[in-house]
Image 1: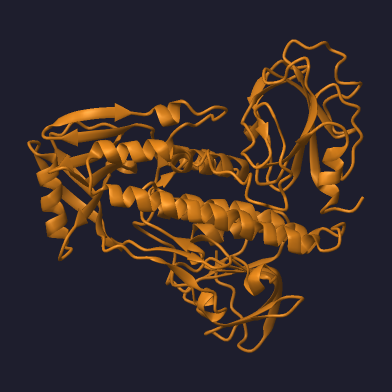
Image 2: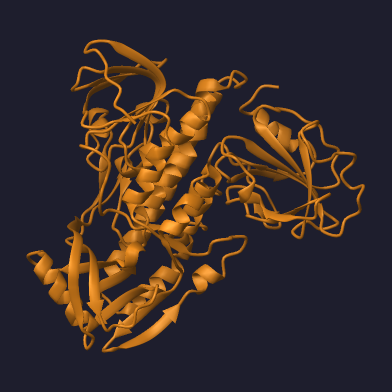
Length: 519
């Protein structure tokens, strides 16, 4: 899409300004635009990413991108991987995948190995606004009503909110005086994307190589027959030394590097912003992605955590900007809860990645054991917001439904058609999903922000829907599901980010919504 030029000194107004055109910024822009906001995305880099960076989408991220509607475009471009192996002294020592295969209510229990540049390209192609590349934000200020941004090209953008997704060296974070503290272990990884010729047994597995009691080399299968290697080296870091270390770890097998597509180094840093929202949680400038948190590459957390940030903040900003029925102080509560939830998760992700990267100095068995202990973060399916004091979580649970946890991707059958489908395949981003399980006297409220599903037992009678039918007349859709039992009689409110906010009987679900939205 062509660049939009602007007369120096003129000012444009948008609902949302985004600084940073990586996956976090692009997805935030796509979601906000999809839900009706006007968006401007500004990025200092010369153009779209072409090579390198992140290499995997975990199971939770794939659920997000299915809801966004782009996963089917990505699936044929990547490869599935859900097995981790260890190799030592010329032999495979172990293979394990149970932390993937044991996932419940998850249709894709695997990584999708795919380059970050591919993900960014698909996201950018879906945008209906251009990314303003080669343009640096040189000033930013905010008032109680909005944000004003100035760039080195003379562009001035006035917006109601701004998302700073401009990376670990975020100029926005620094200009706001938000601290970015943490640790910096003396560890530097070499990263190679390469095509190899080898007699090593090829398999779509993540392989950790052990040598002399340490696990300093990992092989990640990639799309297009490419291999990614992570190599921990001491002293001078060069491509030649990285290749030598790979050969040593893969011995006695032969390996030749036919083509190196990308070589880089990764200096491990573990840092988190003191707040993800300006003015200590009450402002209009929001940090996301690497601008808010950075950690080691181990566990494939960076890209996935950034995408989760975008999925978490976009619906909140849209509600704060567009919804005229918000209760007093609801906008602040929405944005403040993003800071509470995502900063807590980010710190936990940093801790997991830190443990993993330090375990590379130990045996492969210990390293894999650490992965197993922290599988909820590796897969993304264990990330939750319960028990952390979020204002948008009412602590409650019934069976598999627990407030603060991800909504299960359950199978549903449409009453008349008897065709089974998954919940996540039918949901569009941006609305609350209200699930009535069992016999309920359903009274529709907040039609503009909610989708209503009536769920009855798989073997339930035809009249258990209390007269409601599929279709748009009363906006209640009737389905049967094996997760519903004859004794169920409660309501689940699922937020637009597909996390459960409330579970309970009676009209408590209305009270949950009315803390944010006036009737």
